[in-house]
Image 1: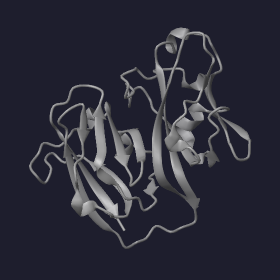
Image 2: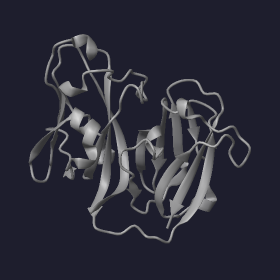
Image 3: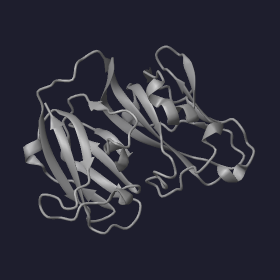
Image 4: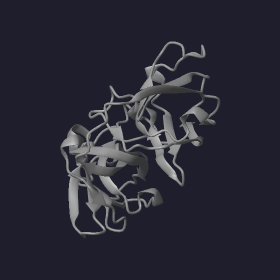
Length: 251
C-alpha cells in the first residue's frame, strides 16, 4: 500500500502560558479529506511560521495530538515525538472532526519553553491504495525568481493539464536561464501554496518538504494538475532575488 497525496495544509497553533489544550484550528481545505500523515516542523528547520511567529524550540515530547474522526467518531492520540521521528510508521487515515481534535500539552512545567511560540503541523491528505507508480514518466522543469515576500509563479502554459507525480526542488548554482540558484541554507523561511482547478491543494507548506533528501519518506502525488498562475511562494523575511528550480515528474 502507498499513500498518494492529493494535497497538504499547514496549520499553526499559537501557544499561551498556562493553557494545556488547544482546539485544532478549522481549515476548509481539510474538510472531508482523508488524512494520510502529519508532519511536525522543527524550529531548526522552520524557525518561523508564515505569520512570523517563532516555532517551538524544545519540549515536543510534552505535546500530544488528539485527532477525532468525524465519520467513525473514534479518537486517536499521537505523540508529537512519534510524529517527528516515525511518522511513516503511524496509521492515520482519518477524516478530521475539528470540534473534537486538539493539541494537548501534557506537562505545564517550564512554561518559558512554550509561551509566545507556535506549533506548525502539516496535514497531508489523499488516498491510501495499492496502485503501482507508472514507470513511463517524463521529467520537465520550471523555475521561479523570488521578487518579493509574496511571489506568484506565473503562467506555465507547457505544464497546463499535466498529471504530476512528483515535484522535486533542486539546487543548481545557476538555473537554465542563467539565474543564480537558491542555496539550501536560504529555504527555511519560505512556504509554497499551489492552486488546483477549483481550490488550493497545497497551503503554506515549508519549501524544504519539496527537497526529497530532507523528507523521511518520498511521497507521490495523485496525478495532480497545478494552476501555476494562481500559485505563489511566501517568505517570512526579505529576499535577495535567487531562483528556485524544480524538476517535475509527469505521467
